[in-house]
Image (cartoon, rainbow over all chains, first blue to last red; front, side, top):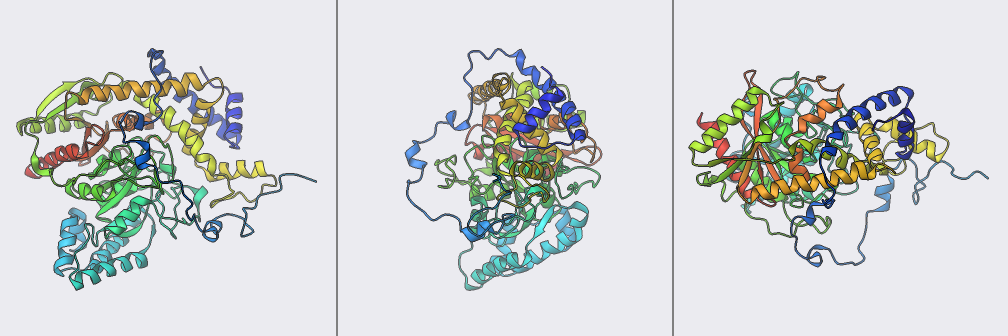
Length: 102
Length: 485
């Protein structure tokens, strides 16, 4: 399987990236090189293998209720402190460019 | 301690603590000496992204006050440490080596950092790394590369290259790093220091800027095994703020360090000594194994048959998770926003295009592709299936052996620029480290010799889940062999 320039543009759109023409060309080259290397995996028959998403399913852990915290209301981060690092706010909400024209 | 001795032999945690306790050298003096070392050495090495001397000296003064009153000192009293800049500290910058977090000030402190501070450590500053911990050379930092203190034309490894370089150059007694596919062990090998990958779940990730959540771990760097074990003991343990952290009790990792290797069964996987291994690295690692055998260990050949599939598996899983984790950097809540975008979607896209570097974009693209409609089964699900095969290899091996020995990296530190044009060759620098990352097991890289050019070479000791005490004991034996020769 190889990736086309259209694929690169489609994936960039899914990933919310705006690539320059130069970046698109380089991405096409790099993704195809990486995917050619990745293709080795197809030598393996994995039809009977259960996918492994997390390590904790392999390591026998204690029961969940011993390490999940109680579901209770607690104070969260300070709004003023959080807003201080945002590019644009009105002090209560994050501000973004206008979404709906009217 | 003069500056020169700090380069050749950084003080151990024990030395720092005992001197403060006896009053022969105050915590403030240790801290000032390390800042002086940073002033002299870091212009060449570039390990630190930000220094916080006032905060550090205030912490050191509190330790000196405790010592003056004769109060019992905590385990890391007055120990100067650096923190990889992917971990947050309230009120300080956290860039993750990325332009997209330029100017961001963290509103809370990572649990690993809080535990160090509660144990009396003095936090010097935030340490340079590959952008979002993605890289094997530290050349992907938006703030410029880190250089290897042993040879300034060489990389320190990555992504925690700054942490390894800081310890190697005496610019910290210990440092925190993170390891997703080798990012603690490989730089430890390149810089000639000790780096520990704890078992998945052993150390809290609360306050770690996420790269790949099923793989990311936090761990220590130190100049010797005992110090690394001491810091690990402080870091380890359950955290209510990280549901993936384990409730298992934490043993004293320093207690059994000197038990030696007599009677231990140490497995050597043939797959790690195949094509691509530098002959000098092979020779140094094999000599170390002979020495361990002479010390009474049984060196047993084993097989981890799926090893050759580890790099493809790792790079699909890690990038898929990264593409989801990095979706949050969109110019709305943190740091950087592109100035000239008039619509919301243009603002997202342009902020991400200008804010992320080339390797981060490459990984977001690969991960998004692997998760996208039509490719999920062929790539992402397939990688998760191979991940289980790789993990089963290790579970079978640890039924027979106490620990596994491998080279940490196929080569000593390479030159800056040597691999930047070829992502696949850069990814292959992680060939011996990604396996333990995928399986969730623990590992340590310990210096075991040098190349003919004087570059450090590390031995990787891998252990089963939560077998940190075992791998540190083996690493201590390797370190003791070094000081004998």
